[in-house]
Image (cartoon, rainbow, N blue to C red; front, top):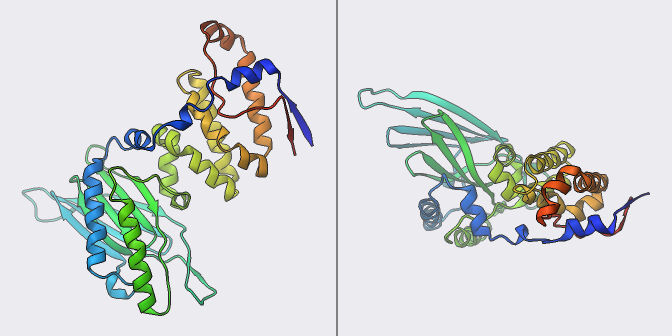
Length: 323
C-alpha cells in the first residue's frame, strides 16, 4: 500500500469552482455533438420507423426481420447487410445520364452484442435488420435487433461515417406468442425514448460496436461529451489499452490549453470511484501530474496572477491511500 500526500494549497487550487462542467445539460451536449445531423428530421424518421414496426406487429419470426436491405434515394443507393459479428454498408451513386450504379465506398463495423435464448445455455451474436429508412438525403437510420444506428455518406470525402448508436435489447424465446408480446412492449418503450426532441445519450452497451468507440475517440466534441461513459465502460470491461488511451487523450487535450480544455479532466475525475476500485494506480498518476502542473512556473505566472483556477471535478483529500 502506498500513500499520496497533497498540500492544502494544491488541494485548494484544484477544488475551486468544482463540478461546473458536469452540470451541463444533456441537450447542450447533444447539440454540440450532432451539429451535422438534422435532429428534428431524424427524430421524426425514428418515430415513424418505430410506429411502422409496431403497426406491422413485429415478432421474432423470420418474416419480420432480414439480413440485408437496399435503400434508394436522391441518386444514392445504400446496401446494408447485418451478419454474424458485423454490419456491412456500401454506397453507390448513379448519374442522370447513366443506368448503372457505381460503387463509391464500403464500410464494415464489428459489434459484440451477444444474446441468450431463454431455456438455452448458448449465447448468440447473429443479429438482423428490423427496419431502415433514408433521411436528410445522404443519411440512413437502421433499426436492428441490437440497436439503432445513424450513418452518413459524405459526397465530398467519399466516406461513410457512423454518427450515432444506441444499444437495444430484445428478448428471444422459443414460444412465438411470448416473444411478440414482450418485444412489442420493448418497442413501445424505445418509441417513447425516441419521441422526444433530442437524441438520448448512448447507454454503456453502445460501446460494444467498434465503430462507435472510434467515433468517440477520434472526434474531440464526441470525446468530451461521451468520454465519461466510455471510460466507465472500459474500466468495467477491463479494457486496459482503452483505459490508457482515454487517460492520455484527456491529459493531452488539457495540456494543449490549460484554461479552455479544463473540462476534459472531468472524464478522468468522474471515474475516480471506479478507478479506485479497479485501477488505483491511475489516481496516483493523475494526482502527480496535477501537482506538477500546479507547481509549474507556467501555471503560476499565467493563471495564478489572474486569479484563475484549474478544475479538478474531484474532492482530493490531503492524504489518499492507494492500494
